[in-house]
Length: 136
Image 1 (cartoon, rainbow, N blue to C red):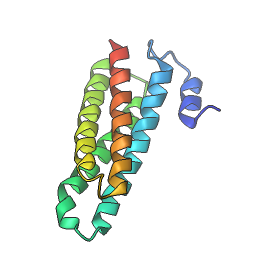
Image 2 (cartoon, helix red, strand yellow):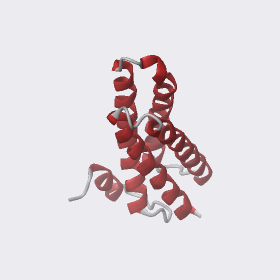
Image 3 (cartoon, rainbow, N blue to C red):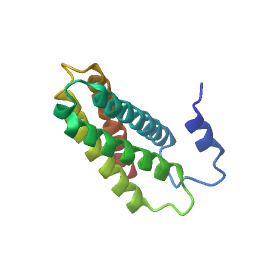
Image 4 (cartoon, rainbow, N blue to C red):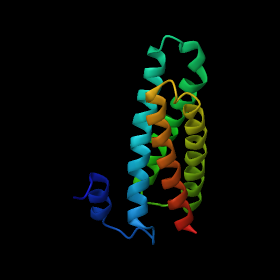
């Protein structure tokens, strides 16, 4: 069953300039999922007893959520497409996802929400890298 992202890409009235629609849809979907996971992880960290030990995790989660949300928005706009902007946003997103996954993995043995978040970040990082490599 097609997702909303896939449906919206299918209904776009102009050519997407050779962008792989499947990789684009996956990347948008992973960015949205990662932004949600990071937002929820930051919130869960703030509810932990040892919150002072998680301040870097909270900050990284919040940065990642913001960048992923922005990346999903940029990738959802196609009119006046600029490949250089898209590449820069994808690189930034992959970078922050890697940093967030690394940070969350450091806490994953004690906090299940960090494990789940790290997995979402790794999937998003991979989706950004996949789309980036397909852009040439």
